Length: 184
Image (cartoon, rainbow, N blue to C red; front, side, top):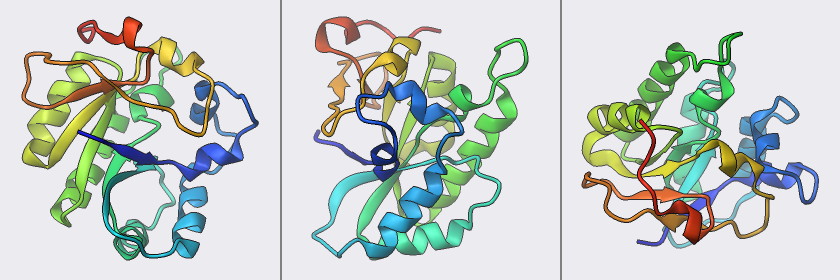
């Protein structure tokens, strides 16, 4: 299975920046995507997944759906995921962000978009599998060490192999470090 994540917002970050920069409020992630979608040329549909901050309180989701369809981008991914973006003062993820994220992904799925779900642990994966069902094409595991990766023009996803679920799982890690189960 070959996957492509379309994340034009990464181009707005400094060269050789670490992926953790994508989780900081230094760019308007969704606005960068919208700008690119306005100028993108139609192409043969590919299994690409647009990276969208699903908890953006200012987004016009209908515009996103229309522009994605016009660009013939067939999928979406919650990147950066709410579990990384929203944390309590004690550093614990805030569940309300993930709930909103899953509702938005369900809405996109109802319009025919396929979904990849970015997750930091197995409980996030379980929630996505339950909520997104057959619309879920896979899970992208983002452990804390993935945030230390340097952003490049071609960041590959590594298959994690069978993980006790029919949903394929991938990681942004080098192959030797990524062949382990997801943490619970």
